[in-house]
Length: 354
Image (cartoon, rainbow, N blue to C red; front, top):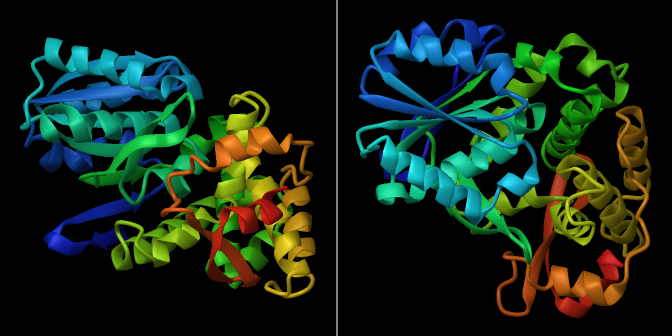
């Protein structure tokens, strides 16, 4: 499949390549790696044994000196404390603005590595090499990078676009089933907000690793995000539709201290619950929530809301970075394939969440 060319304002361009086996063919990017004296690969303890040695070897063969940083796997690494550790490594390696950071891993690695690249020396180039389905279809594309605080998710971050995104769908075969399923939650999200045909395709697949067409599905999701990001890089309007299910999803993640639900699982519950509420208010077409429920069940994703204490929910919810004053824009569906943005105050929001 052809590379997806992202063309942003300020004449900034990069390409998303989606190709099976591309991690074994990084020599095709020698013209990119050759531009840098040093490359720092940031990965986690789960990914390192699988891919780090091979990726490091291939980049070094392009004439680039390679350093490696391996962080603990999991959401707890997406923190300012871990970012500071990485800054110290950058200083030790004498990283300059003419060097490169490579994010090799899932969403946590990509967000953290991108955040460190965006802030160290006020900006060092970086490349995304996502190894989870969730990262390949969503978090590696679009330039959102950041870390969590104890009070909430992604409260510290920036918009910082990569030099390239290199996606190898074949690595998904090493993912545990739960991690694969949470990536499918984001795929389902794209069908809900933008592409009824994509939703229908997943709805009628047999549920076995997207029925063997994973590269096409990833390519389609990246194409959707490219189109949305080109029109609204800084999330001033249209790009907000990508947050469907996320307002409640982030509450669920934080409420249970990132232990009970993965990101994709929390978003799955958020998409269904919000749509049940929006159907009752006459915003969503009747039957939309049932379709979402059925597709989540087929992909072994949760949809049932756990019991939540309202005071604790409000404490988490009202710190959401998407608030503007006392208003927030919630993403709802008119029907599958068409999202609508609804601005509401805190009291109205609580009616949708609880």
